[in-house]
Length: 338
Image (cartoon, rainbow, N blue to C red):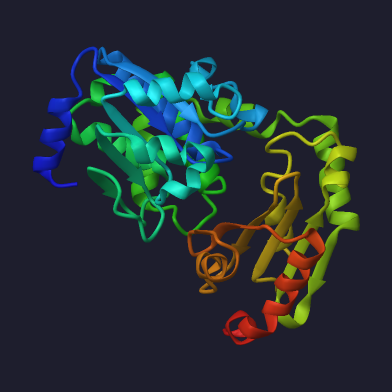
């Protein structure tokens, strides 16, 4: 966004304006953290703000301040549609294409007001009135901080806002392990700490809140369900709907599991492939130059970042796994490149 556009946006964010913040399907830490962080800032400025998510998100994110205001479109469709219909401004956080919002897609496409996209994924679609897109940013939460700062509203960033934004930053950087972590990222975190943020409390809330079933599912994934293919420097995990139900699967229970496969010495590409009642969902991770964003876009109707992406399949679990494995020879040279 240009300086002039920030001035225009700020002029529209006035007291009592009806604003709805939206994010992508299967919201993660960055989606919820950036949404609630922005929610608190706009509320402090007197706006009438709502947050709508396409579907449920993990319990380990439900400690965030004002989490109870979030409207789940899948569970409360009428209420969510009513909020979007009545809104004057719509924020689109952490998604670069409307189809990533699932069933909320129709309501967003029908929206006639001013829309503002804040996102860090590559190749954003041209659907928003204003666009803040920066693929070099570690997370959308980082961009929300920079957006608020550029509006001259840093006075509204307090410990509450900091908790939400830090949750987005720490989860989307893999606790600052991923290449997207920059000096700029750490400077934002330092500024949040100046506002009262205590990072260790956020880490405890996110990473030390496992259920017994979640840990048992992790053990099962690693000991029974992981396939390693050294010739393709690939490891993947496959879970059926029946297996997930056996461990009383809840949204977020497999968050981060794919990174264990990627941590194996010599592995450059990892995937987790999960079956649910609707379709097959996949998470891809890579090390180095191999682009899982491109892999997901080309083969599984997905996308994301160079080293972290997702995809989906309408085929059966068996056919999806067969397709995944059949694709690997095509990418063998890239996966084995030094």
